[in-house]
Length: 108
Image (cartoon, rainbow, N blue to C red; front, side):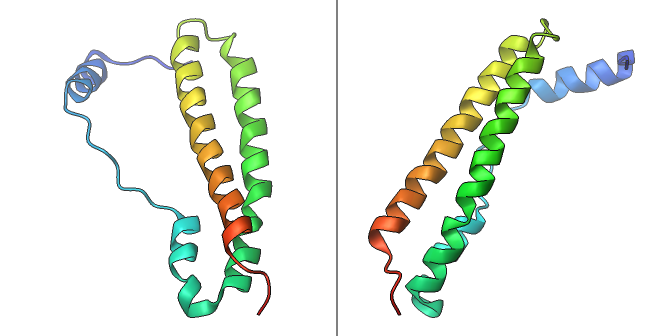
């Protein structure tokens, strides 16, 4: 168990009051897609479609996190909100992969 010091709590409160900025998107999937014209669609398609396994694993982890949230009633609402947002991000990745399957050729 941890406890915040008064100084630590004050620092968190100061930070919480600062404006939130959009974090730049860093995505290996998007980078790979932008390289497709240089390396070819078949290799890009094959590499990108391996991401489905990672996405499935992350969905499983979010399920586990949701289950554990009940043990933290003071945080459960926030954990569930974060998990819903992360699920939507994962859904976007699956949509991208569906588009890759439709749009990129698997033939050299």
